[in-house]
Image 1 (tube, one colour):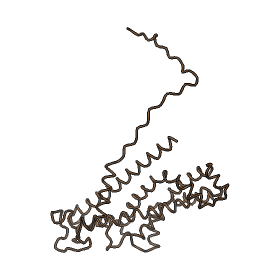
Image 2 (cartoon, one colour):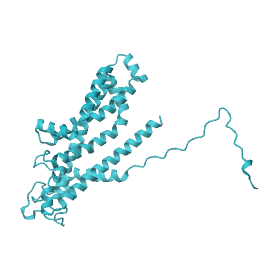
Image 3 (tube, helix red, strand yellow):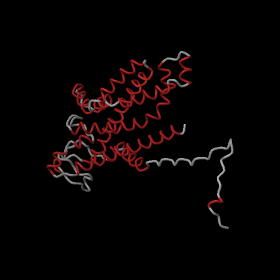
Image 4 (tube, one colour):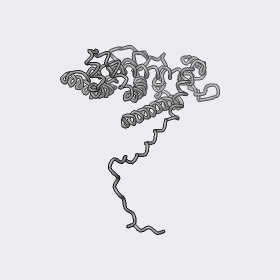
Length: 296
């Protein structure tokens, strides 16, 4: 049977008919490669004592600048230290600095952004102008200034400096979410029952802030690791006796002069792999959070 174009007619849907269902949105693919790679790096750093039994600070003067070999899998640096041991023990320090700095910046951002979100208009405007003024200054300059003021070159000191200078953008997000949530029914009910600020923050605001902030927390970890590496590369980071991925990269000038490419390439590969994995996981968390918000 042949159908002509005129044979088709499309009648309007009857009143009250349900609209056609839109196809479900495909779920974002989980970054399994990033999860596995970051998990292996974390496992290696956690088992550094068993995985790399050599002392990372031991100076083997008979193997100065040795290339990768069965005896020294990643070679040695210009001072004769085993690079394989330094990678795993230094990863502990870099990850510690990143996680502690992210925790400090998150705590400051939550407090500052929450206070700004519930403050009167003039106080809120003044607090936001302070953040905008701080963001107008390059963060690395703030880090170098505070590092010079504190003067403590330790993993905790570096994490404190990086955390204190890295909370501004997260505070802006917290402030926006708090201003959106403060007129919700459960917050108004809590205020009607004379609940205090800390009770409302702990019981009503924080649970609703976790989802949009997870991406920024993960991003802050990678940014803190990169900042610590930058400080060590500039000679403003950890002391000589403390090994980190950044302190390994600070030997780039001597390694280039001696032709020891492995001293630069191997720590750089570990640092880039960690940062890319953390960033990929953070992007996945952001996509999932945006999709959850769009389905509300």
